Image 1 (cartoon, rainbow, N blue to C red):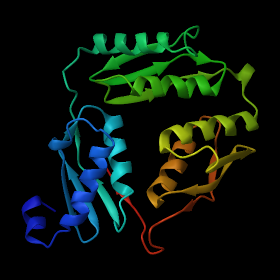
Image 2: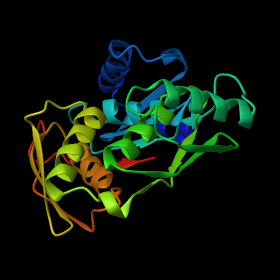
Image 3: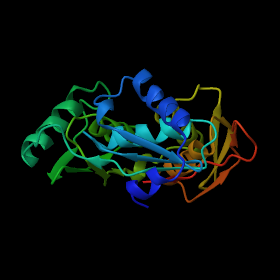
Image 4: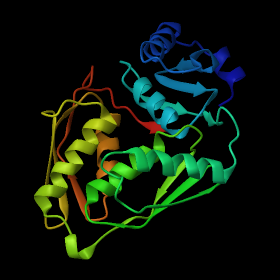
Length: 236
């Protein structure tokens, strides 16, 4: 559906202003470059951002707005300044080396067209997740492919995996430590607790499924929607 067609339809200006206000309160850069249109409960976001992490953040913030049925994020990822692949890889290497938990860990970093690939073997799953998070934080990175492996000799206990997943979800979703619990049993992760929206409920499950030691996920999370009939769906 094009902008000209949607503008001809009655759009929800109040919801559009509320979403843009949320972006401003979050101190997102270049908010003026974002365009938001809400039609029949669906929010369409156009424009560009400097990295993929910012695009994910914008989707999450928009999905928290009450009364929406879905968020369609059509933002383009355009780095603020084009960076040569090797220069970008060096930025990521430096960021990893400066991180206190990763200083003594050898991690190979490659870059192609803004896509960072991490490889190597680490002793803890938490180090694998930490390296990916650090890579995402580097300006100019469009995508991170985590090919790191956890040493078989040091496969973490399921209790440890659950604790690390809880910490990862708290950071990724911006929830309080007591809001989500993750219990792992025979490779299956059981998610319990509450999240602000249905979109974050799905996002939590997607994040846990990425873990190399998780085979399946049972999602018991409760979405605290503004309305029991309001179900967020995200398309990006």
